[in-house]
Length: 288
Image: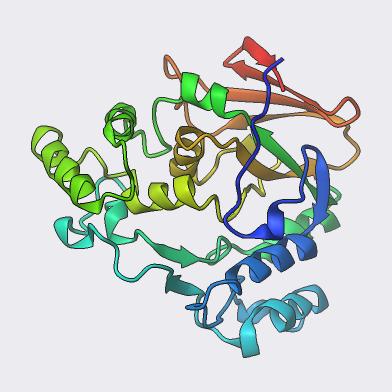
């Protein structure tokens, strides 16, 4: 068995959840909305992507009325801690498909800002592919720390891992900035996929939201930088995943081979027995 350590959440609205709990989409959105409202800088906006074609569909109109403040078309986006400390050191020039995380650090956005919830949720229910509830499960931080090597951008995380190990006091911002300068000279672009102050907030305050996946047979579709940050801060990695209609046992798989020796994570989820069996490719690692 691989044990879970638990998740420290920044705000209280996900803290009551346990492994294999089930929530509806409405409950998930309510918890996210309540979390955002805890911040003094929050000014509202669209929690979910607003699509004019869906305005007359009752299910979507209900979501827009409840979770898009005054039917705003402006996305939720605000900073919780002023300007990011390292934003001026780096450009937003993209490597592969992403800009350096430091230019976006300390910002909070809705996790569903670009997601078509009608297609990813309601249409799948209509097509009898998924149940109405999402399953809450966590990956153990011990597994992540032992086997994760890259993010979904195929960015090597060995140098960020080394950097974290050398910071003894995360409140000492002068020392933190000096260490960043030292690493920038030695390892150009080393932190491209590692938001430094974002990690600091997870370490000191806790995680904001669980990850949510809407694909039936995939996990870790997004948010693998958070996968790394959760594990390195001592947290398990919490996820909501859809439940296939008519199945009590089902298989999901990571979309990238980001684990040791370029392997995929495969997970067999057994709802009745409340267990998840983890594999790297076809090699069984253990049961959660």
